[in-house]
Amino acid sequence: MADQPQWLIPLAGLVLLLLVWFIYRRRSRGDRMRMVLDEISYERINGLLIPNGDDGEIQIDHLLLTSQGLLVLDIKDASGAVFGSDKMQDWTVIGEVRRYTFPNPQAALYDRIAAVRHIVRQVPVAGRILFPDSAAFTKGVPDLVADLDALLDEFGESDKAAAKVKIEAFKPHWDLIRKAALGTQVDEIRSRRKP
Image (cartoon, rainbow, N blue to C red):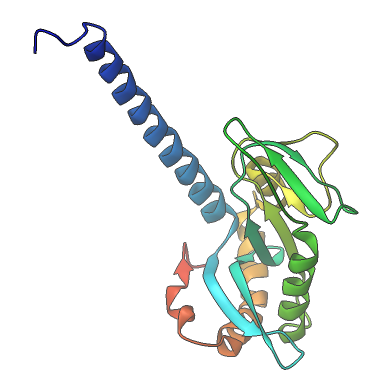
């Protein structure tokens, strides 16, 4: 034991401190996302599989019942500079640790929105690609892309009485989605509050 360098103990302490900070940061981001989704949605279905209208099926990661209608939400966990636009086929993320490319998510989101609209024809259906972390679009934010603040600004409702009336009007259409769901994932519906 006497042969160990003296700097090893402070280094181990620093590594432990960084690990605790990383876990705290990761948890607080998740808590903030949950808080925003709970604020804008009255009910939420995660991992929904519905018919796509062309004799196939399509998966929707998150479908929210909001006071403005239904919201299809694709979440992209990216941190760093994002190079993407409406016309680019692939988007690139350059983070502190790594660089990677993924297909432009807008086309898939349009397909998901169309599948939901095929079921609930008389209700507004919107879609957003949510980048909850510290993603920075260097050349401007593409269509249908939002961060947590933008999502809250766009879909948050300050007039709770008006929201209640709207939600009641959308509820029968929400039930149509639940009935059209393929499989048992509807059991995962999370209700935040009753209108």
